[in-house]
Amino acid sequence: MDRPAVEQWIAAYRRAWASDAPADIAALFTEDATYSPYPWPRDREPWRGRDVIIDKWTERGDSGAGWRFDHEVLAVDGDTAVIEGWTYYDPTDATPHEDAYANIWVVRFATDGRARSFAEYWVQRPVREEATEA
Figure 1 (cartoon, one colour):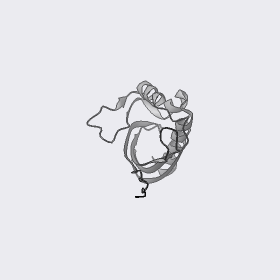
Figure 2 (cartoon, helix red, strand yellow):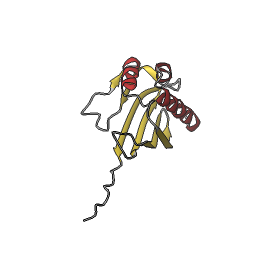
Figure 3 (cartoon, rainbow, N blue to C red):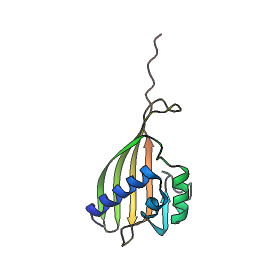
Figure 4 (cartoon, rainbow, N blue to C red):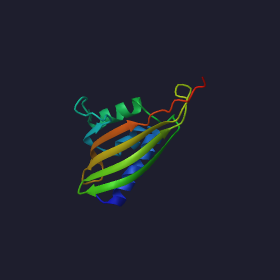
């Protein structure tokens, strides 16, 4: 993999994120891929297999949410890329403030450019509590 190929994969990931379309998601991953959406992968098993990834992704889908994502490819070494990202979700009735997350993605690619392993490590930005008048 090289940086332009990683950037193309990220662009395809963003399209899948925006659409939640199974075909868009499937195009990202090998048939036997693993996907770990949790920062503590030893406490939870990753999603195993493209069909499971599609099912879990669409269950949690963000296509109906307002969001934006900025990123920087930090490193590419052989088949592995490390991406730093920042995700921002628009306020909703349930969450009246912008939710924001810092992310590190570690993606291992197959020779065809699809991910064979995806792990994300994230932290939510603390919500500032408004000062109350005494």
